Length: 111
Image (cartoon, rainbow, N blue to C red; front, side, top):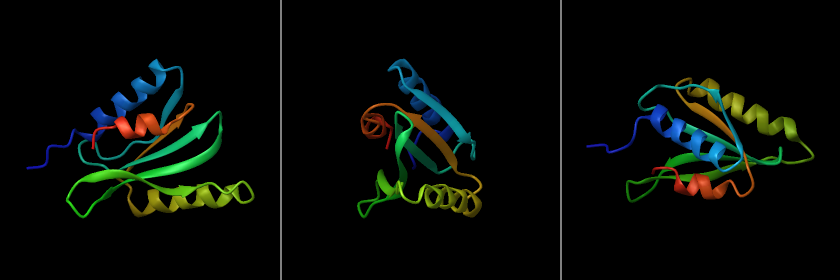
């Protein structure tokens, strides 16, 4: 049996945790309420965007993996990639976090 939290609960907790720590978090796209894939766009003071996606691992777990880093010379490519991901999976959630050391929130997200 899958013991994952419903996606909307996980997203809500992530947004609240970031806000409580003095950062900013917003939902850019709402996905399927219970089982939508979660994509996290992490920023540090509005810069250095990194995309994290939960990926299945060989042991059956699902952990967040850094899948893309924004190239400062080609920022449009990063946004185009996210647009393609949203188009290919309309049930996915896209959440943006703007906080120093966003990895600590991603690491603490329920796996």
